[in-house]
Amino acid sequence: MKKFSILLLSIISLFAIAGNNKMIHNNVERLQKLEKLLIEKKFTADEKLFYPGAPSEDVRATCEQAMNIVIKALIDIPDAGITEDEFWGLLEKAAKVYKQFDSEEMDRSLSYMEEIMDIYGIESSGGRLNTWRYGFDPSGSH
Image 1 (cartoon, rainbow, N blue to C red):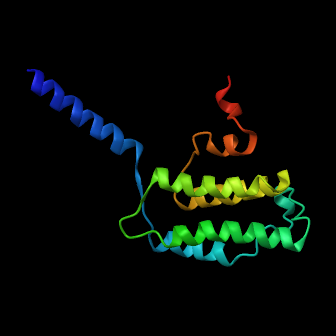
Image 2: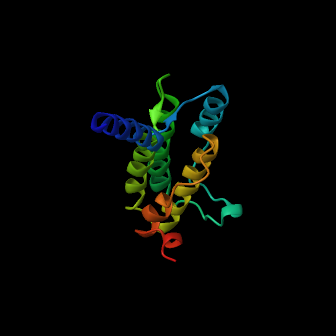
């Protein structure tokens, strides 16, 4: 009976681990949307988002390059896919780059990340975007 309990706990643990590490894959539609986003000029003024644009061309180009690195890495996902943890790790590395810039650039980078989430059908960051922006998730502080 003890062996059965250990086996059952092991199987449950494996499913729990697998459930927390969902695989993310590309398809033709996602690749097309990522390619379109990749070639788009980024960090320019956007009245719909109340974003005034980067304060200089150097800042704009640096911010664009950082986002394009993320997008290119997603385009290059192997056929086997990447884990959801790897996906969030990639976005988190980019978020750390944007901390050195004005809050407007951080906000705009997060809106690009939301666009990437939409491409992959990811509805929530689980508070990650808020944590990267504010240092904590204000929605979880109720």
